[in-house]
Length: 613
Picture 1 (cartoon, one colour):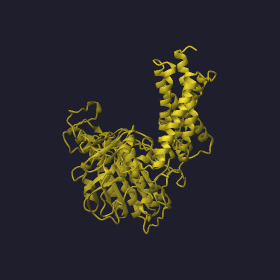
Picture 2: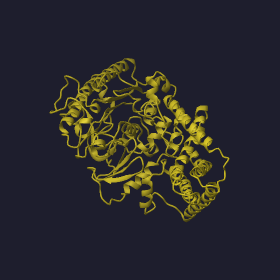
Picture 3: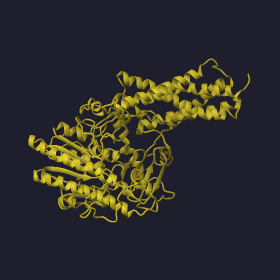
Picture 4: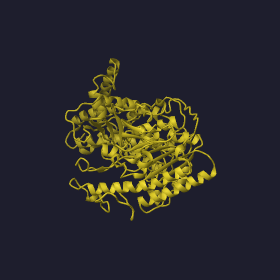
């Protein structure tokens, strides 16, 4: 039989398709971590994704063989096919093991940890385990070699319709992504909660597009899913024990966040109203870090007390924080106000997924204009609350002007020289940062003026002394601090983007200055314990400590971006990107040559999986 390129392509493609049942068999090991759907949409997504996504993976594995078929004859082509097939199956099997332990998939960082785990702190295998691994690899090589010789060299399976099989995979793949688009827009948990278990799956979304074309009412869609008693986090052991919360008193709780507020932008000149109200009576944390360098992760770490590696699962399952659901169960009135839209950063699906009705946005044409409108709406809400009853309240004010470098016409601008507009295209490594830093400081100063009105109103109503107040930022902002052309945020984990102000004030809060390293992950356990009267051990429900503990000082903290995360120590930052590549830098982002993993990295890997079943 003539050895043509077409025959080689067909033989290798059939060999790849034959891997699919083997892939499905191994992938069953993910099923204990899949919240099985019981509705038609969830079941349809499971079937379509199981066929389409894993089918796509085997077709991607065929591409190297297709390229080799251009230069190798069939009698030799079976050898790389055998190796590639055995390697692929072994990699998938290894990924199921890693996922079971850490709830993320194999990457270069995990391989590096394995190679550097000299003491068996992360990976500890018995002799029996190694024998099983070697046996599985040998068996995979034997099976793949037998299949490759029969299908590629022997040209067996000539009647199998490989084109039709590829077509089915393509249709089911497109169908699964289309179904996810609809489910994501309609907050359908039975679909979205499946996403995390599939390796290399990046599902399509189009919620904003559907809303813009009038195909979706997001408020109505999310209202159908808001339920504080829903048990969405089926694969989390969180909390480890039922919460026991019996407050002797119910103080008001208020969280104020200023978007992209840097740690060096708090003081008598930059924030005179906050400084006057909090400097003597509040507890200020001098070495405090957000749990993220972007809004989503920073706010998530504050409200959940969990690290960013839980975010995807919490978002997929639309699981609210215990802090918010406990506030609801204790009868707190909720006044949630944000200048930026809550659904734009996913707060409607995570932090406030149990809240209905939820104000998703604030009217206005600019960040500073929305900040002003939000402040006025808050003052009006609190007026109504005061007139109704003595119900304790929870308030959140999320200001946005510094994020947009926005200062309204006529506002005080004490920092000069200052640019009058912000265009990131004008920025470069040699750009003088001072006028831009001053613009940012002036925006913070404007929001401080608005917060002065909020503080005066609380005092006038007699609420100031009865309110547990947390004032902080979601993350910081780079202003080319180290001359490396970093501007903005979500790009590194150095102090400009992660070191933020933190001041706590209220009943039971001892004034003072805390120099130890603290984290946003310490805020939720503090509020749960001191405001809501929860007596559980903190390890039942949080990865942080009690922010009011007198001796608090973390040896390291963790922060996440949308795709990366960093382990921040006093002298270094270990950065792991979304592909698993890693590097170790000092606190000014200069590489540390020949650096080895510190004990903190191994501790963090164990810490990450604290609440996974």
